[in-house]
Picture (spheres, rainbow, N blue to C red):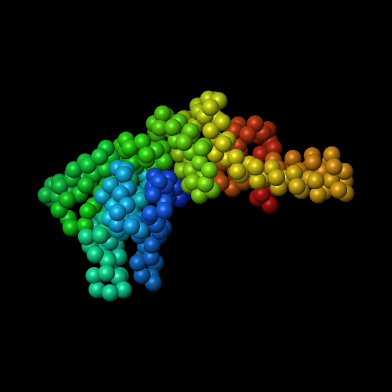
Length: 305
C-alpha cells in the first residue's frame, strides 16, 4: 500500500463501524458518542460509550468490564502507542471526570479506559513492566494495565482478538484471517438495518484496502461474491431506480425504449460514481461489477470535470 493510499484510508470511520457492530446487540442500552468534546477548545476523546442502565452487561471481550462511562481511544496502524500517549489518554479521562455539573457527579468508579490498536505495543508493555506496572492478558487480545491509576485500563490488540462476536474489528487489519473475513461477510450480508449496513460498509472500506489479495481471491468464490453484492444491494438498487426513473421521464419525449436505455446508462453511471466516491479503484469496480474498464474510466473523467 502506497503512502497516499494510507493517507486516504479513513481508519476511524472503519473502527467506528467495527465498534458499533461489535456492540449492536446492546444498541438500546448504550449510547456511543464519537469525538466527545472535553471543553470549548478542540480537545476530544475518540469515543465515549455510555451505558444507559446499570444492569446492562456487555458480554464480549471488550465490554465485560464496562461501567457507566467508557472512554475509547483508537490508534490506527500508522499511529504510535507509547507511554506518553497512554498518559495523554489518562489525562483526557481525568478532564472528563471533572466535567460533571456538580462535584463528583461523574464518579471515577464509573469510568473505564480502552485503547485499541492493530498490533501489540511490545515496547510499551516492556517499559510498563520495567516500571513495576502490571500488564495481564484477561482475554485473547485484551490486556489489563494495573498500577497506574484506579480507573481500569484495557489495551485491546485487534490482531489477537478471538471473540467471535468481534469479527467486525478483527477483519479491519492487514493480513486478516480468511475464515474470519468469510464469516463477517456472510453475517454482514444479512443485516437489514440501514445503520448496520452503513457500519459494515465502513469496515469493508478498510478491510478490502488492507487485504486486496484476499478479497480478490474471495471474489472468485460464488458465495462470497454474492455476499459482497448483497452488502451493496441498497446502494445499487437506489442507483438503478434513479436511472430507470430518469430514463422513463426522458422517454415521454423521446420514446419509452430510448428512455429506458438512457435510464440503464444513468443507473450504471450512478453506480460507478458512488463506488468511486467511496474510494474504490476503477480496476476493482470493473472487475467486481463486470463493467468494461474504459467505461469506468470515462465516468471517473466526467466526475473530475
